[in-house]
Length: 134
Image (cartoon, rainbow, N blue to C red):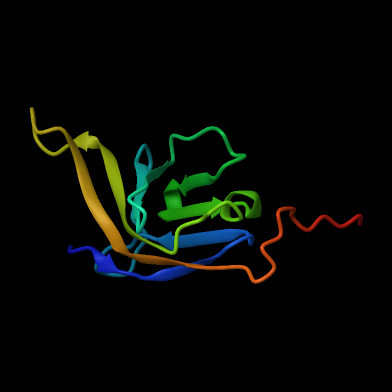
């Protein structure tokens, strides 16, 4: 199956969540047990950044897979998006199976989606995040 093009925006200084379910041609979720995912972008300022489900420092982002339902979720906190200084980026989101493509061929890797990310700049350019006492 060919990768799908999906463009989206991230609001600077706001929490961001991208969630999708990987399905087969019949609309059934694909079991992603022991799979990993990676989203890599290259910004208009030539900065390359990679987000991986192997990450364990959730203060910067959290990228997770719910394997039995084929769900992939990338969450980026407001503290991270607030520091984005670029305007746009081109990205690829890839999945890697724990199975080999064939003996000696390495792991099975697919590009699931790709496209453009636009950063919606804040008007206030606040250096601090909203913190309410509730």
